[in-house]
Length: 220
Image 1 (cartoon, one colour):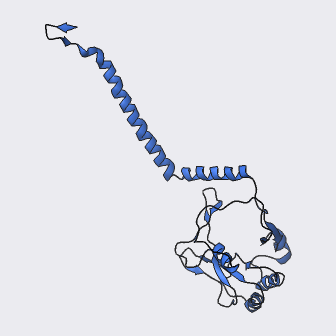
Image 2 (cartoon, one colour):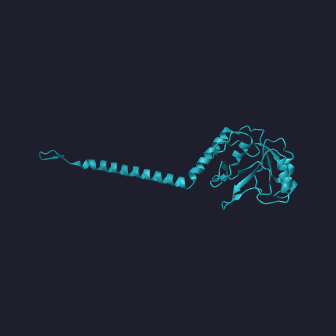
Image 3 (cartoon, rainbow, N blue to C red):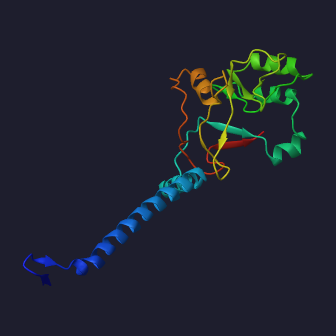
């Protein structure tokens, strides 16, 4: 309605509309803050990484198993070998005997440590000398000291780091190199020993070929 000759209007009808606009703005702001807080919690709680790993596992499952190279043979310490040879660790003379059966290999890798001296080290060293290139494992201890082959073991080609990094579900999905380690990662040492181009240390995801025993496997 108008009052007098000045055409003054009563704006009371616009008040509910203005209130709705203000309320919508408050709601949008609250949603934005809530979304940011939710993402913050997801990221720092590790749930985001867990979801990413689950998606990666699903993609590998959908892709299916990949055909493996028959040039790679895994000789494992398992229940059968423990029953036949005895409790772990095996005598190093046993490792020397194994080497005597692997004369045609391109490279031989032991992915367990030999940090302490043994009475059989001279036998083991002689077997290493008479074998194809042998790579031994090294690792960083919790106090940042290095666990390397005992000084009584000789003639091995090189050492490679075997540090691993577990994912949120206890599965190794990434190649890892310890920040304080001067030893190259094991995969790089193997590539060098087989005269293949060794890439810059890679810390990405492992291309999953399949479950246990996908690669050719023999008991120790």
